[in-house]
Image (cartoon, rainbow, N blue to C red; front, top):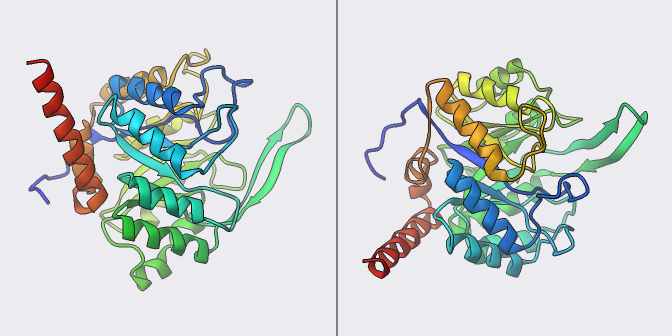
Length: 312
């Protein structure tokens, strides 16, 4: 580790590029292929993001967990920019063998882990019916398999908590030694079945989490920008992108993930904070403490030296 001291004015801006549910009928700018995802990652990086959250999609837009697709996404992004990679491991299936495979093969710096089971639904007030209605199962056995794979691969876990019970529920994992401090949390708000989009939700979640943890807010759909503003004021990091919301604050549909990050970065500066660079984000999130983070930093450094030589 370096002698880096956390500057509370620095904010890690993450961009969630596509998610698993949003499609081009809802927004024509959702990326599907590895090349499209990488192009969006570059736009996010240029706009001020230091981390991208990745879901893999088929060319037709469906979800895929094929390790070769995640590997291709990593190659394409690395060819464009040094942004930090955060791979989702979310699945409604009990079998997480593919998730384990792409974590161990691609070794992203960060792996997102859903920390509890919940009702996962979307309700239409206009139709008076559910758009979808399911249970998102994440029992401890499933969580432990993913955490063990991340430990083997040297990947930093990001703990995705949709409700306060998910945050409190890490206690057995701490006691077992399945998680190692310092911890990194993502607090998701405004998912039906989860905690509501209120500043009190963030205050409560940050009170429950272990002291010294780093955290970000993920504001889903309406209220997205207000929740980002709340996190900025409370000292947290923020996440934006077309997975979380499709619209700019003025109500216009975003033309790219970069357009979403531009607003998030401007908001960060407007409250007197600064979007963290990739290097600063690596320090803040303690990615130099894990092998995948050190290797990624080394690979990026080599790539920059090679590029400098070519252009010398």
